Image 1 (cartoon, rainbow, N blue to C red):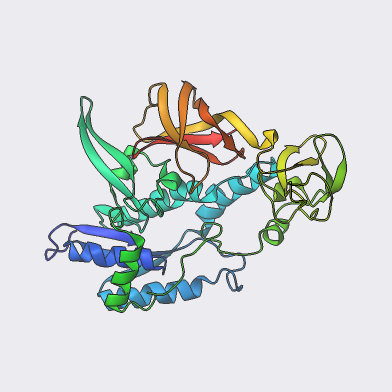
Image 2 (cartoon, rainbow, N blue to C red):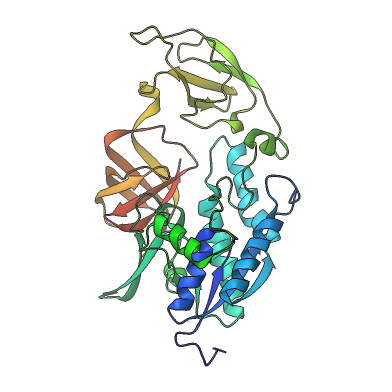
Length: 371
């Protein structure tokens, strides 16, 4: 069911109302594809609030589609999002871990529910405005699809996409993989896109920017408890372990507590260092380089490998958080969906629940959830 005027076939692109997906849609059209936009609505609980009004995003996406001369459809995946992503997100927070909803959202919504819907529209491929690349290579086993970092290292999003599999990558296009963000803005301005100056969205995938503790409060019970130092001194009271992440510096409410000082007499900053779930104690330490904040290795579970099989043990690069440069490491054991890494240099605030993602140069191999 491909438009006869289209040279390359039909592509359905996820359009969020942002500048990246808008420019991606234009690029695909320039390349000779028949392009259809799909706007995903995945959150409904308080969609009329100041933080998460998808109405404006839909208006922006529809305006861009109109300007580009492409069809656009809105689709509601709120039930799938709540079931597959948000419930897991809350489960992880309840267990004292800090999950990454964008990773789960990509695997379960953008490249599963969205991909299925796009195929039902007669699409041959799907596309998104992510900064990443896909490359196909011939191997002895046949054609293999690799996930690569974007050319613009400052915007690379392969970390969030590491759970994609061969079937998903074989049908995916990332038009922005070889373009710097500055060029994307420039194209948007030259085209006169209505959202050319719209700021990039941050915050929880599909839920938007909002006061985080207040938001989690609605869904998780608060269990206040003591904030303590490694030597057992109580220095404050926490609102519930779920609301804190390792390495967190702001929002601890203990700024006035005296302790270690630098040579010039200024007090060293406090950081969240550990959580004792059984005793409901939050441990804090002073100083960015406190030993409790540094890890020489990690264990991860629920591993997902892009090639469909784990890489061989050996030397790689790894990210334990987005926007971190690759840390040299050794992949030691890999079995039953679990693996361990040993780092060449100690890593700061390695956080259970976040993803450890493995790289071989520019190639994203996959990863797992830090335990």
